[in-house]
Length: 137
Image (tube, rainbow, N blue to C red; front, side, top):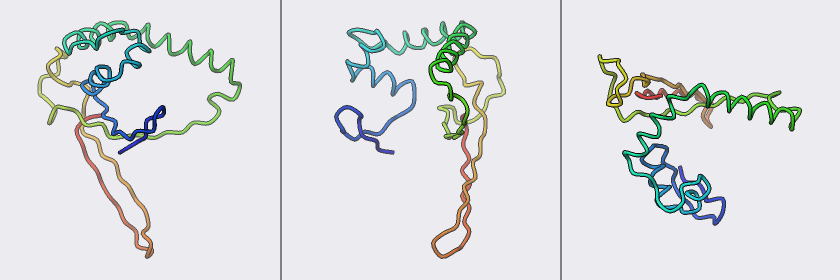
């Protein structure tokens, strides 16, 4: 998918992974400033360690999200009245599941097999169906 940059209109293809986020932080000084990183993007090791530390405080992060939702609800009275759900297949770097389920940072213990079915009717009135399967989220 190609989307235009909201600032300059330059088309780019988003890559949604930790590696691509690090690349974008390395490339985009304004983004680094926005998130408080200053001069340099973090190394892969530093980023992994940060995520591990962050996940140890998941309860605090969830409380912060609930506070944001509450603040939005007070500012926007209709916030949450309508709900739209969409999903996107997100592949894992792992090729398949592992018999070892202990999370130790070397394997993806959250990924699983997923399937999405698309259905429609073509221009000539013929029904079609497309099934996409992946290992990921």
